[in-house]
Image 1 (tube, rainbow, N blue to C red):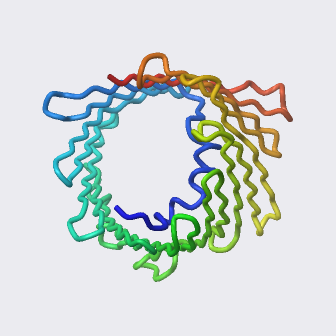
Image 2 (image 1 turned 180 degrees about the horizontal axis):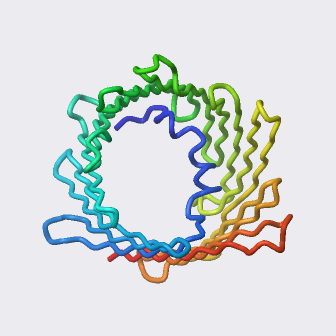
Length: 276
């Protein structure tokens, strides 16, 4: 699209991904393949506790259109249609689920060199309208988002944020929960390839006077292996190891323990993603 400030959801995303992405306590197997017609097929099986679920997804790209269809074990069909440059510098995303006919949603994103704007509308009889905007540059961006319920005539959310991004670091501050919480995060890359990094995040909840402080990081052991860890002031310690067993296929082993209650059973997760 453009080289502007990015979407509002990008504010603080790098730090959030480092602290949360790929951490899980389930057993997950993902197998991807590609047909001769250019369709990407992905099958996923997940075992959480004693319950097993799964889905099959198909993704097809044609010119400026992406069609993504998913069928899960609950017989729910999820469809997402993405259209790029229907209008200049825009992306249009339409999504819906069957048999829930009231789940439709239409989102339009507009990109400019110094601003972005997103509008999302739920396609039902009492639509909720979400609007977000950012202004600035790829180095510094200010933004906000709001949700409005047309039935009750009330705002469901309003959030504001700022981010500063440099070649080797990024920082952000987000005022959320209708002004009831503030989150600040800082991420610093430790190498030129950005495969190793350290991150710190603090969240303050004003209504409960609760503070949550989390530190974490990732380290590239070798070109095929990466380890990650995180620890917060509540004693939750998590770690994971990712290894590329064959090109594009990754094994992930993760675990989490409560250091303030070592008698509790640790949680472990295993994920295997196989790609051709």
